[in-house]
Image 1 (spheres, helix red, strand yellow):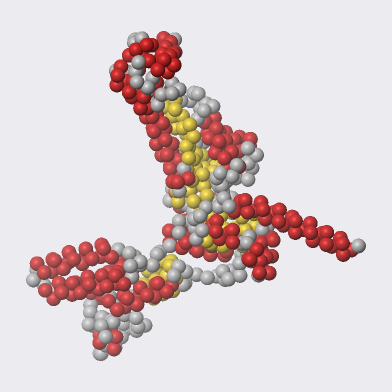
Image 2: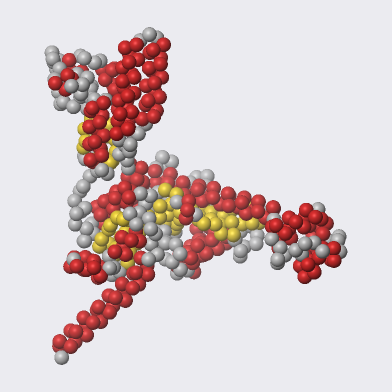
Length: 507
């Protein structure tokens, strides 16, 4: 009897797992075929695994193939998944960095390899009289110049190898300030060092070489060549042919490096900085999670006419223009920004709840406390209670937060404020642009296009023949019907519409 109960329990458990898996598969099949990071959560809403992907859809789907269950660890992971969320990135490198940062932040149970405090590589230019280039993973506040971070350290080593060959700097640890050698080392004889230790080059000459190397590392090879070419021409004009020849050799060296390394290793500091800024926003606003996706809303109209509501989307701190949306306001006739905001949020998040768009981690409204109140009403009516929302008023840049009497005021130089203002200002810009586009379309549109059966081409044909829409009212219905492509039925509709419009103008 006991064995039967055990079998039944196992069968029920397996049935639940397969039902859950079907729901997850429906969710996964809607994922984009884009690079990004995926976060898997268990029944307690705890993140248990974080991964990166070149294609989110293909990578996450691979977990649900039966062949994937050969690994007991993977089977246990898949059985534990109750929800999957994703963060889109612009490239695989961004996804790699983001995955690393999130694993360190959340320490998921199934992420074994990246839990250690792994650091990215930097190129370090030491703070010495005659600086050296080094590769380091430990960025310190020691006065040195750090360039990076870089994801692929092998590419960095290759770049430094080429620099050592064509634009060499010293690589010894000799304290040149306190020592003065009589003879240079073998590297000078091989052309791999300028031998500043023996006075073979001055400090000014060495620093000029350092400046050129920095420009090259930072990806400014074209600007560097132009700078050197101008110096070479100037030296040749002044009869300084030895200096001109040296500059010519330097130009050749730069081209040698850039030809052999078509892609200077990609610096990823922009995304690192955005991570810190988003982390700061989370702390300031007391958000439950980092705001990887932020929606910004605003309204624009002219005297209450042609009102347009818009939403702009920021992902990882960058605007994603392809996800911007605009809404022609339908339920508000007069000047009413508050109810227009409410309609915009209602329509936007009704679509999100249908699965057309993912929900954000933060909503930013362009406006004050009243706009925030109406926006919150829209979310409440949709039964959305887990998305943080704020509004930012112009003039004093005050941040209004629900259930707080006083607004938050941040320093103008605070990166968190600058990003939030960027979201607000971008929504304002897009709202004005969208409203102008709608208003322009309405002004160009002929009343004839409101008649069923008449498009732009036929309206243009009628205006060309009769001069204007108003002039048509003065012709007979038979004359109008004789126009090619019109006929009696359409002529009757046109006359009816024009008379109706004229009556409205008289009223």
